[in-house]
Figure 1 (cartoon, rainbow, N blue to C red):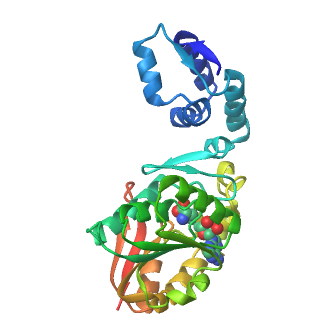
Figure 2: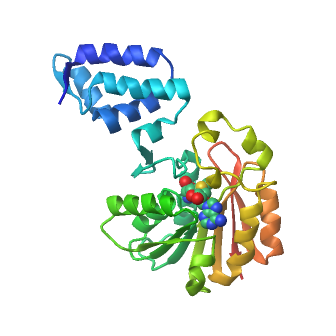
Length: 289
Ligand SMILES: C[S@@+](CC[C@H](N)C(=O)[O-])C[C@H]1O[C@@H](n2cnc3c(N)ncnc32)[C@H](O)[C@@H]1O
């Protein structure tokens, strides 16, 4: 295990950060690859005469940082890890890196179903890394969830993440197009949740290269107008939800009104547009009666 004095390490860290990038990304690299957490670093500042023990040597860490800065490769893919809510999740280029704004979708559910002891049955469509479903399966330990994705390789990551995060088996994974793997659960869901691909084609073409060149197109592109998948999910949802069951969707920053109209057209009620932390109408929810 490579060891280095705290003083030398802090000097090296300052040089790396002076090359560019943000502190949070560098902290993820140090923690997930170097084995040095923020609290290790804070402690080492207090005991500045000590040595730090790294999981990988500085040259290796530096080469990853260089790749991140030169090629705009997301640090999460280079490290193979991301932190989301209180979860530590494995990520590869087969899955979207779960976004901080999506964290709120779990709070929306927690706000609707306030008793953690509820025995709910829920579905997540397009689970990717599994982030949303895993958070929900942990939050409602007596509930059962089913999570789907069209991409089998993404599901394999989600399954690993669930096994790493929970000792329970209250979440099952199915591969297929939106609702199609869930035929046997018609009329049984208390709620369904999805953060589907919703980027319109012209916006997709102009995405920053750290997104467009690395994250899966199938996780981002929502057809010409961005609403292709949302339309399909809303139209078929009434077949799968229980009476009064909820549909909870994330959408692009400017799609809430259109999503609301789609919900109305498909006979949903109690429709609400909920804002993310930047004040953007990011989530649209409704009940099927
Ligand atoms: C925006 S990502 C969301 C991933 C994850 N739920 C999250 O919030 O980070 C959309 C997910 O939908 C999946 N997907 C795309 N088209 C699909 C389809 N036709 N049926 C099922 N899943 C699909 C993608 O593979 C991707 O994992």
